[in-house]
Amino acid sequence: MSATETQASPVHQTVRTPDPNAHPARLKADAVSVFYGEKQALFDVSIDLPEKSVSAFIGPSGCGKSTFLRCINRMNDTIEGARVAGKITLDDHNLYDQSLDVVELRARIGMVFQKPNPFPKSIFENVAYGPKIHGLARSKADLEEIVITSLQKAGLFEEVKDRLHQPGTGLSGGQQQRLCIARAIAVGPEVILMDEPCSALDPIATAIIEELIDELRSNYTIIIVTHSMQQAARVSQKTAFFHLGKLIEEGPTEEIFTNPREKRTQDYITGRIG
Image 1 (cartoon, rainbow, N blue to C red):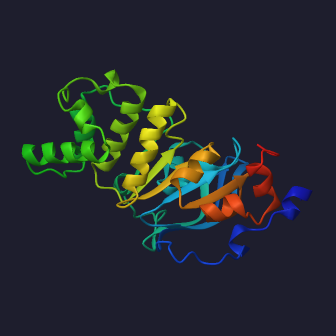
Image 2: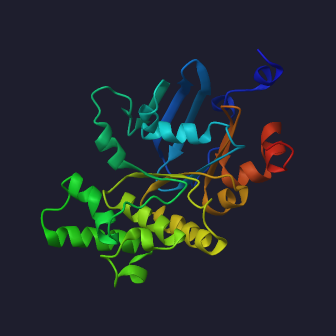
Image 3: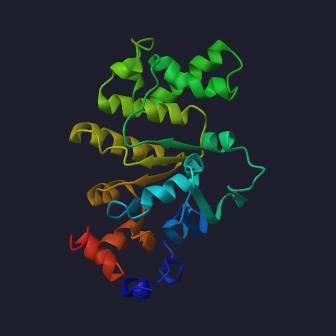
């Protein structure tokens, strides 16, 4: 075992004063490890993620934060040789139970990727696709209502209402990302995962997405992976710092950035490691 490993203390042993304003946790991870073949990418991650708030995962590239994010809606299932150990629960239901419908799970736990990825369809059909697949609309009018409401929640409807039947790929990068958020919202998720959703966007589009995230947290549990500590500080209420596949420290965002308990967290925040 290396010196780094011997110094690492499991995050669930770190005791913090409970945040009186924090929402209760619906999503919980217990000793989650991830293996890609013989290589272990994530080591015993345990964390509770509060509902109706934003949790940010920060850390250097390759530290395991996106790997853990993909565990939450079982996206790692699609990678050959990937294996997940430990337990993740939503409302105390094990997300890795063999009887669980993974398609249904990914409707409950939506995902927005780093690069906007609208389907090669119209704006309307991009948002309508999920509700059609999951049978959420009983009529054309129901479907139209879902699409319009989702676009409104994503802050996009006023910009596209006169071109709903034009290709979604014709939108700007920021608009495409909001279209992808609308697509995720349309199936009525409880959790929205965001994997660096602003990294490909300009500052103005980033500010719009961040404002949208702040609005959405009143209705959804949001978990965001970001390389930007400034973004984590702006949008999240809880922050978790990952390093070398381990969860080093987690807690209220303000406390993590102003009074971290782990030296590695302090070193990352101050730019000594990255």
